[in-house]
Length: 284
Length: 259
Image 1: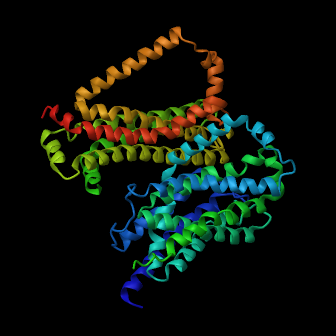
Image 2 (image 1 turned 90 degrees about the vertical axis):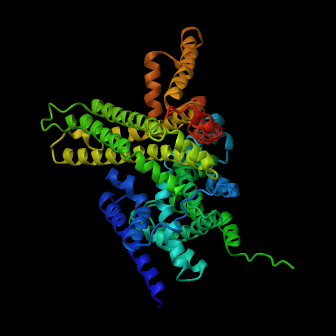
Image 3 (image 1 turned 180 degrees about the vertical axis):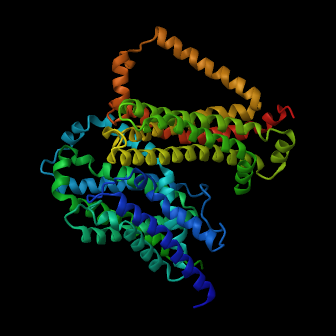
């Protein structure tokens, strides 16, 4: 192994220790058996540790801040920013359509709209969720600056890019393990399958987020996509079935989460994979 | 851009340190009485919740003062002429300032959330050990303050988006006066509306506060939620528009600098 490769391996290991250890400690000690946070500090700070790990690894290994992907690069890349804002909404609505046909006992869009106090209220809620996502962008940045801003490029120096994105996605999924095993996202009935599905979901999202990051040479579209995903996607998925959302969620938590996180993201993952690895057409 | 951001940080470090000190002091002053060892002397939950909200509001106010004070630190004709002469200098210098101001707001929000979360956990721990009233466990004040911050953050961005073109176009002191006249004009219009206009949308006094707290708890209605949602999302494009206006009037403002 060349010295450069050895240094990269060392950096990856240091990053993983700094990203995983505090989060595992905080989520194991700071949450209860149902994955609800007991410690407010844990719930507030947990998304920052990948970014902190990035900074500290660069500091400890004297790497400096080159290739940090911190510029916005909006010019010529507005379409990626647009996808970052609208992609999670699209995925959520698509999931909602699947829930509507697959799980809803009473397929009645009007009832769902009425349960949410009308179209105007739905529009208002959506705008407020987007506003909340923007106000919390530093949380999304906290994760993406670590995973897409540091780990994925480092892994790409050690293995082919598709493998690096997959490994990075699996590690990102395992980073959520203490919460997933206690029922976060996928419910308490299938903790281990939940973890498998989380890793699969993170791999798919990893392709989407890496595609955005590489095309713009910036972590900010990925950070926006991440926060909008966390704020808007689940709400959007329940829009068509709001009138019986509680009952459906109680009976089908695992299935709904699988559809939301492992099925519908393929709509964006496949174009992302094509966008990342399609060879440009040769000019004559 | 990084160099200019570094320059903002270095030239304004005293202002930032004072701002940080003020925020920590505000939270210490407001929350220390709640840590009274005697349960009978400890303030009620409502008062502690109100204090947490007031601390968040005061912290953002302190940040606002800091954001406006940074304009005076490099208001020199020599520096202004250098910026104008450098390639793309105006866009980069103004952009760095706008970014720095935004980062101050982000930093205050992060700090308030950190302090709020640590305080809530401390109160919970003390409550479980019998050193604080039981009702302090899992204090809701922190969650209310987080909701309030979702409103304060875009509000602060909007206020800076209004302020900064004035400060760039007329200089720090004159710009403050021009902005004051502009806001007085808006205030005059609002007062006329309150006195003579249709204010049924605000409801009665009791009704208004009931709806305000319902809004903090996430129970809004119809056009109020659309209005709030539009406000929370539209401030960012408005901030960018403000940046473009400031770039346009930067050179004019340099001519007005006193030194």
